[in-house]
Amino acid sequence: MRRLIGIVLVLASAAAACRQAPEPKRYEVHGQIVSFDAARGEVVVDHEDIPGFMPAMVMPYKVQDTALLDGKKPGDMVTATLVVEEVSAYLTTLTTTGNQPLRSPGAGPALTDADLLKDGDAVPDHALIDEAGKPLPISSLRGHRVALTFIYTRCPIQDFCPLMDKHFTAVQDAIKKAPELADVQLLSVTLDPTFDTPAVLAAHAKALGADPARWHFTTGSADDVLGFAKRFGVIAEPGDASNALVHNLRTAVIDAEGRLVKAYTGNMWLPAELVADLKATPPPAR
Ligand SMILES: [Cu+2]
Image (cartoon, rainbow, N blue to C red; front, side, top):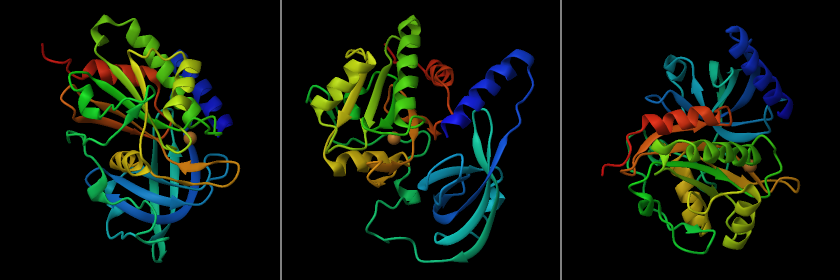
């Protein structure tokens, strides 16, 4: 995984230099359909290890063609081809091989279409608490464009939470230099609220050089935090001893009226793209 990102970054710079599209990488994926959203062209797959790319997890994927979702049902066992390009990843084949009851139905944090926010939807409030221990519901950030991501501080997978932290540090630097983005607020929500107390988040924020006026870290009850995360398609489940949580990633842009503008799936986005999305989002009305 780490090696893949290295390759992707090298290819990205090569592409910038000679304007030639890098070769996409292809992976075979085996798993089960948890849910899907044909309108968004997205399918949530509970998949096995993807050797060389990603550990087993529940993760939403874009499909290249929504026709791939025709006739599919939650519970379908599938074999898929995942194509990973410079900044996007999507499935090009999705073949049903059987159907089985979903793992721990009703017990785990299963994701349904109804949970997922769509672009333009108002982002609902959950009781989030910031690194100073003060309530910071998302509605308190109205009047600001917001970039939001999900992390946990003891995440051992360098290309997951630590990469999100690194990218948000780069975004913070970029918005400091862009007067037209002065209203922007960054928000990192923990997926590990029991461990990530406000004090732990405050230390983490300081270590990253987060400006408390601009970049907030929030925790809360497991219900509130994971309930909020689920609306963006983020699922976090207890992992093994080496990894406290198995989770996926989402990074979102929210407009000054509190509506979802856009959500990135996974870790294949770049800080410059997020900055461009923030610039394309209307600034708050005066
Ligand atoms: Cu992580």
